[in-house]
Amino acid sequence: MYPPRFRYEAPRSLREAITLLQEGGGEAKILAGGQSLIPMLKLRFASPGMLVDINNLPGLDHLTRDGDGTIRIGALCRHEHIERSELITEHQPTIAAAAPLVADPIVRTRGTFVGSVCHADPQGDWAACMIALDGAIVAEGPGGRRSIAARDFVTGPFQNVLASDEIAVEAVIPPPQGEARGGYLKLERRIGDFATAAVAVAVDLRGDQVTRAGIALVGVGGTTIDARDAADALVGSPLSSDAIERAAELAAEAAQPRSDHRGSASYKRHIVRTFTSRILTQIDRSTQKAA
Image 1 (cartoon, one colour):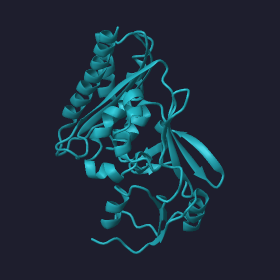
Image 2 (cartoon, one colour):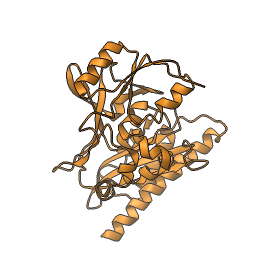
Image 3 (tube, rainbow, N blue to C red):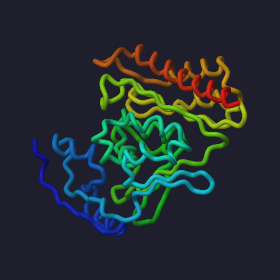
């Protein structure tokens, strides 16, 4: 199927791009990697009047770490750049674990981290990582810039809080409160498939004490789920077997799966419980080995 006709623009500055979005009056869409938007156009699930291609905009392909440990991922930073980044491998284990599991190698060469979060697919990997890490999306519009917490950014399936004249320019991951540990596990029927269920875990440690924790669930609800109760149950104590079991149970309770061709609701809850426990156990074992 061919997409409907649309106006194509390739601005050379962020200000020009925002002006074009204003002209579009809610009928314009941003094109970055296009790995979600182009298929939706071809299937006519989306019919924008204008595409604003931001690939010519300078300064949006960065992947950097500030002196305080804050990580910044620009709107044009591709999945493969993250997957191959020594900075991510060294400093951000949750993202490092998820990077090779995002879609397939072809998609990872063009798709963007920020675009994936903005797409708000309930089975998207990066939104879960951002929530687990207490990350934020920085948006710029006619009124300037604002920062939106990742857990408040997605409002429903394929919906986010961006205004029609705003562009998400950067994802920001705050510095860890201690030593950053984490992981990401995903059950998929084949490589590149959407998740039957997936779990993102991020834990900050000082000694053997958990100072901050985040757990987010993929594919087991109408949107990415912030398993806040499960994460909060870990804070202030060591990663004991009892604490891990309790967090895994709470994560499973937070899941809202539906039975479908990928598995029953009870099976998906079991996967959430198992993956949460497995990641936390691996973190605990690596911490003990390092000590």
